[in-house]
Image: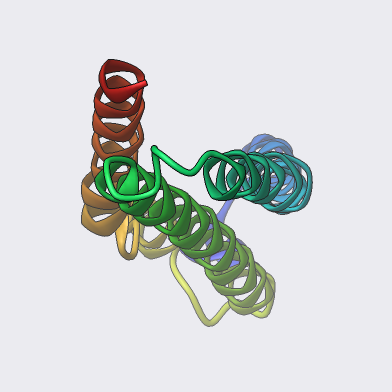
Length: 149
């Protein structure tokens, strides 16, 4: 149903839903960007640098710690890629939602079509694949590294 065909009460409830969805996507975008900046770049890069510094200072551990270090590097890279994809997916959803709201307001898009468009999650399968891979790589690197110390 297009906006021109709706009764006033229905339009106000639709506007409330649009406003709630708008703020939800905006908050998700802000959280994704904050996660990239604070958690991944600062913590993981600092931890990797500290681990590499420690290992390079210990003459007997260089060869035995090569596998855990690579696991840590892969885990950190995968977590960073996951966060970047999460941010760009959220940004894409927000842009698409803005376009749909504009089309809905202009009477060019049905409400049902706009709702079905909000349910489409691009690259969601990739997020569900990369996230656990990062966790496994970090966990394996941690366990093997501790066992070799």
